Length: 307
Image (cartoon, rainbow, N blue to C red; front, side):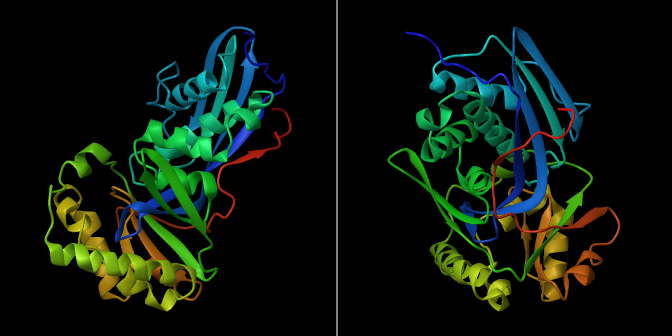
C-alpha cells in the first residue's frame, strides 16, 4: 500500500497557553489564554532539522526527543507513514514547567502540523481523533482540550476515549498570570496528592466545580466562591509555598485566584476595571502578565513573509 502524500509547502501552527484545573475542576477544566507558540513544519528530502527560538532554546533537544517531533511522528504513523525528512522551526513564548500547558501546546502543534502537511489529513484524522491522540500522548485531556478547542473546556474520558465540551467564557473576564522564575515538575506536584480525600471536601469541590461553569460563562461576580478548591492546591502547597501564599493573599483581597495547572504559576481571574491593580499585587519575584482569552484554539495560519 502506498504511503501518504505530503504538501511541498510549509505549514504554520499557532497554539495557545492553557490553564487547567481553575481551582475545583481538577483534571477536567481548562482555559485557553492569549499567549502563543508558533511551529512551522516543512517536509524535506531527508533528515531532521529542528530550530528553536524563545523559551527552552538553551535546554530543549533538537532531535527525535523533542516533544513536537515525537508528536509529529506519532500523528504521521496514524496518517499512514513518515515523510522522508522534516524541518521544524519553533518560536516558543509559553514558559516551560510553570503550569501554563507548554507540553500540551507542543503536542497539539505537532499533531496539527502533521495533519495539515499530509494531503487528505483532515479525512484521516478528524477533530475528535486529534483530541484522542493528544490525550494519549499527554496522559490527561484537560490542557490539550483547551489548547485544541480554545475558550473554556470541560474534558473527561469514557471507555478510554477522551471527550470535551467547549464553552465561551464571559468577555469581561481578564486573566492575569503571575509567573515565578523557577519551574516545577508536574510529576513532583502530582506526587504530593493523597490517594483519598475526606468526603466533605469532595462534596464541596463538586458544588464549586458546578458553580464555576456558571460563574466563568455568565456570572463572573461568583468567581471568588466558585474557584475554591479542596482537592489539590492545599496538598501541593509544600512544593510551592510562595505560590500558595500569593493565592491566599489575592483571595483575601477579593480576587479569584488559583494555582495554574500543577503550578507554580498563579492565575487571577480579574476584570477590566481591576486587572491593572491586580497585576501589581504580587511583589518582587513574579512576572505579572495580563492576557486575553483565546477563543480559536490551535490554528493553522498563513506563513509569515520569508518563511
